[in-house]
Image (cartoon, rainbow over all chains, first blue to last red; front, side, top):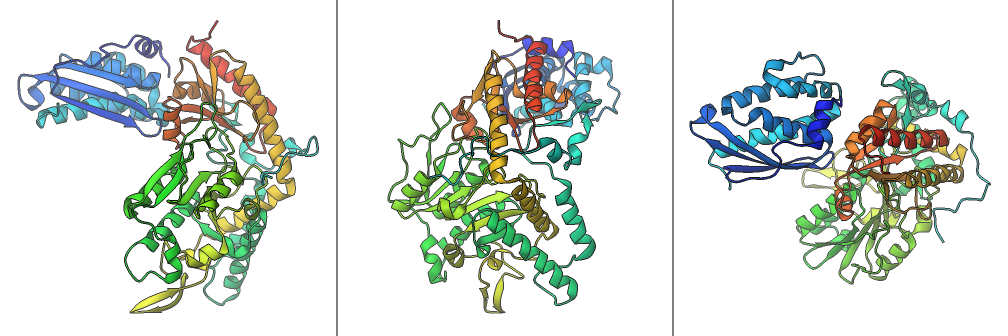
Length: 148
Length: 434
């Protein structure tokens, strides 16, 4: 499960830290282990799925899987439209929740395919999803009017 | 004097190999053929064949709904159920009428909290229940080292009644800070653990009971981590209520026990109401059966109670002094060997004095979840997370921890396997301190 890509992201997370500007900030926890993540999103242009993800900034306390997964989310989601980001998110979620039965699409998931091994450990799936689902929630809040 | 009896030096021994042969699950392998090293008995213990056989035998010969019906099976089932209650009562130094079967320890603690809650609302509360009435100005005292099961029900009781929650803090070495005592004349309930499920700490029960009694407060003991591992005499301890679970003491899940002093159970209003807990039912209102039946509404769990009776027989045959001495040896070895590893910090008392067999620790530079993954790949089962004691972890400034916990079937070789596993995790994540 601990592929070198995961350990690299864990040791040197990309895009870490909370930044301005942002339209929404959310705080998610994993109640079984106490891991926490705060995610901010900054969107621009367009409506709904056409809006662009200008930034995803975060502060996280947690295990290597949750930290690395959030770092990879930053790489894969920023610079894309909300529609594209949600497609990537759906593919990622399907993979890690797939109990090893889902063949990941490397063209869509890039570095995130390293998390395919997490699917074999149901107790760790929440770790792999923590930052990603916080992003989804933040986008929903931003598009519903924001909360800063 | 302590009701957790001191270990007779060299007196108590047990045959671990013989005991392990009674637990089929301990001989299985996990994760590609690794022998299972089960160090998570603080979460749930494994069950010996004798317990499984007792449940099966009951179900194959005598199963019926207890305390209703007059046929042969109903009679046998009721006898078996009540016999289990008698043996469990004797095991913890209680009278049979003081033992209430619940779903688990959490339900037992909620039963007390809701009983008090029911005594605190509205008019028409029986005169006998007035003694449990709580309201604004009253206080409930608990501790920072509680499992959520002995904290959240009291927070909720405070919310419903307007009472205020206070608590004992925990010192850096994992003991209760008895100097800063929140117990006052306003205190109505003092709820505390008999052994921390994280730190292993055994607080001074007699002293806490003395302080509570001095102000007329009721004591509620979470005995989940003590009854399975050491001799416990509830009458000698002098607590008013105590709760423990079957599944942590080699028995089935789905069965727990609430102990209450007879006089108090007779006055406490019921929590769950319905069938079999009544005395007389009319459309205008009802009266209730004496305890313990008053607190056992509905058809109860039966094979689980019989299984727990068998678990108590099993532990009694080994002898709780011997169980305690064995776990003490394992705990001592784990404390010494883990503290010898650079980068490993024990959370809780560092010696076995007034301490049981839950050993929580941190590894510098490795998140507990990551460490447990490496241990799991070697077949070692430990608990990670906050172990349902989130405020305690906050008090220690950590998000989560790794906990190894022992029972009568664990061995010194398993302690060594844990220590070797921690080393492997440090190597894997490249955090071996020089």
